[in-house]
View (cartoon, each protein chain N blue to C red):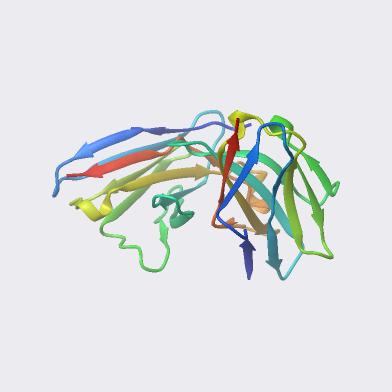
Length: 114
Length: 118
């Protein structure tokens, strides 16, 4: 079984401030982890993914995430928020194996204040 | 990355009619596609797994006679909402995975389709 927990539903930061979106996972086997972003009325776009290579993963738009097995976490960060980062962010987990499926967290809405 | 296209992006229909939504993988072959439903300010709910050349696998609680899925080719899956009612109004999103995603689970998503049933 696998699951993802994204605590809180909304994060608000000032433009230029650090963005930190938290994700904790549960998996009975080594997981694959993903962060997706959804802009209004659009589908999901992959930001970055962890697939058992480097634990610090860099993605698009300046985002990065670090896989910490001891903490079962995969938090998403960006050093400096931009207005265009305002969106909903989903953390997702899957397990290696045939016919693997993604399990999504509830999503976090990021607001960026001018 | 792989591109998935979904059409139409918005559709409004009268209660009792049927609506078809198409999902295409544009630059890769997708033996498996997934259909999700998303309610306002909520996460994605997996409705069904669409397998090319075979019957779709529906998640518990999803009416297969209401939501007909056809995956007739390696690049096209369709979702038909039959006899639509206002409670079927929602944002429907399809996704597909490449051969590499078969073991990692990575998905590429369409743009989504906003269905409004009057």
